[in-house]
Length: 473
Image (cartoon, rainbow, N blue to C red; front, side, top):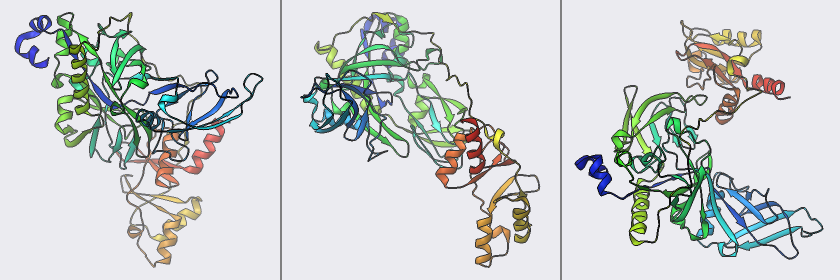
């Protein structure tokens, strides 16, 4: 369609082209499935349900449950989750069902321990509350340490940038005003046929971040297009294949379906500042797909966590289905909102920030002797001394344990003792973020610096424990 529009213009394209098919294949964490197991003998009412050791939610009728793809195994966390259970079912594998019950007069059974396959289920309904983001932010990391996120592994100091989405094939970017996409639209979903059943959660069309809620018969789907995923040190998810046909009803739809990757953009966000993830620049999908972009004068390698190859296959397969008459287009019964505004969570009790907790840092400079530093530790009753230069810029940190090791190894100069690769905190960070940073790096304190690397104070795990106890009591 891009070539048709480029060569002939939108008016001719609108007359010559009937339908444009789209596709995307990426991690869609807000996905899951409803299962109905049928009644056992004696009849039972589910309470706790585990499928291959992954807990499924049971706040439903007696023998229904919902398994979410981000729910992780009790015994294999970060390796196996709800998405893998769904994939295994599609592959015909046997799933271990373990369930306990609250017995009642009409449901006296108390325990089930059995093996099932997808054929044993009365219904298996894929139901995804939020799929097919119109566009997805590209993630990078300016911090000094590696971050493990739902966008994958972000290397420190802007060493890589990771994006998701299929650009010009993106379903919602091909019809951003939802002229043909709405409740009841028939779609390609997981290798089978599904339907849009509403706007997705976090639907934010005003910021070009629309989403859709979808469902389909899992038994008719293909494990090729529904694959469990595990993100290192983050958690589990599932890759979902999804495609939407766009009937070309007018020149506006010809224009949007004819948009090339050069004209479709997203933002590059700095995950190294997780509190607000500031935007570093706007970037086109053509740049992202080239393998490198420029950020603040630095060339940064890019990679995708979604599959363009599979997205193209989905669009091509959907085209074949339509041409063969096995897939029929449907008119929506209700349009999706184009004005919905996404709001952040309302917090009536806010988590304190680092600036609310930090205290003054005991400091020294590299010219100080080990005896001077030891004296400060004793006099100020601290375990950490921050090393600064003449302008109060951070150089490093030294602890009472470092001094003890120096004495034991007969080292006499502070420069040979100080740790120069320092994990830092910023005044506007939440204490929860810093607490996790301290835990990951197995340290007990972090100097607090501003963007110019000037020392503002220090925050310790002890300080965090005290304030958390006060706030959440």
